[in-house]
Amino acid sequence: MDRRNFLQQSALAGAGLVWSTYGFSQANAEFPTVRTPLANRKFNSKAVEQLIADIHKNVGNKEIAWLFENCFPNTLDTTVEFETIDGKPDTYVITGDIDAMWLRDSSAQVWPYIPLCHTDPELKQLIRGVINRQVKCIIKDPYANAFYKDENKVSEWKESDITEMKPGIHERKWEIDSLCYPIRLAYGYWKETGDTSVFDAEWVKAMKLVVQTFKEQQRFDGKGPYTFQRKTAWATDGVPMGGYGYPAKPNGLICSMFRPSDDATVYPYLIPSNFFAVRSLRQLAEILGATGKPAADANAAIALAEQVKNALQAHATTIHPKYGKIYGYETNGFGSYNLMDDANIPSLLSLPYLGGVKRSDPVYQQTRAYVLSEDNPFFFSGKKLSGIGGPHIGIDMVWPMSIVMRGLTSGDEGEIRSCLQSLQHCHAGTGFMHESAHKDDPANFTRKWFAWANTIFGEFIWKTYREKPQLLK
Image (tube, rainbow, N blue to C red; front, side, top):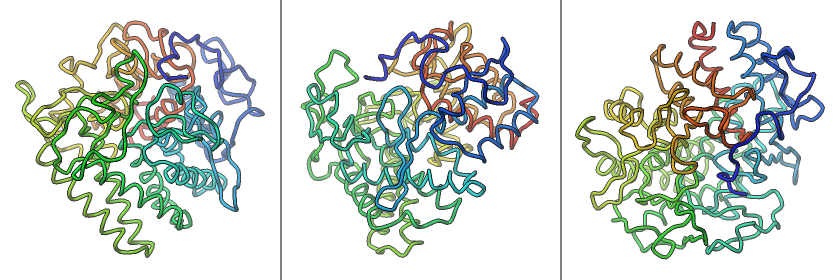
């Protein structure tokens, strides 16, 4: 079932939102225990439980502590399947209410747990397993964005999608970020743990496919092998012009037929994702060099990163009459720009979070002012919530993820406090974050079980707890 079909969900129904007698919060009318019962959790981490206990003990805002207890472990509680396959850890991670593993979501869902690997060997193995599973997915099809655990399962989209759909693939929407996120996860894991065992021959094979795919989608030598069309009335689910997208003038940027929202791009050069690609290719080259892999592979990654970086310098910015020089969201190489931002990550707002630009970058700051204003067609401000949404759900629906990202990329205590307050009041009594919520009525929300939104909320609270604990009193 497609993500946008999960509309108007009830407050405490469904997986991950069940009553239990476990947990740190008291089961009372104000903060009921809604976390999955201990016996039903998919994975238990001692380090995560200790962090939850610390937050409960030291955070004065008890509602925030309750939300952290529910949200931060939600990926582990409800979405992971860990096993050993051919002597290697293997972890399948669903998004929540859709039984499929997105390369993007699975990376982001476990990312905040990496710093806890030092004190939790089982958690370390679980993340190694995610990296190994992602390698299998990329080798199966680097153009696909979502996969099944059963490699022989046939997709529900098989009859509607006109593309090369292989068994074991849930969806085949080409998104640059789908190949960036596994590099980010592997790099972060390596830097934190020093473990290089994941960088085996299969991982190198997958990474060569990443570089190859990026180069194919620069389209210097034709349109490349990928096309996608869908038989649907929903415009953002299909790619025009025979499945290749609207024309783009080759300039070194990488074409992305879809955004991280799984919505089709308007112009093929998705600028936030190209920034992410530069960062990821540099990380890939560093890993290859440090682990003694062939120099040619590292050099290829660096050369491509430089080419995309130079193209961004030439084509990523435009002049807005009110905000001055800003980054566009999409461009086509012919001088046309789509000015907007989307809540999904990578976004323009998230560029410092992903290491694409520095937070102090003047162009980013001007872009930030634009995307957090009503001059951005997908910034919605209402009676209850203000934040960025996107075409995926539609008008007036704010994504809590965008409020989290605003806080994660801010150095201003007043702005961070405002984000915390908004998030504290957008869960509609469920104790969990959602995909989106109406700007005037948070009880009108989509996706009652969306693990990425929960985990990144926990990441924000933990960062604030470490760096600005006074904001949680």
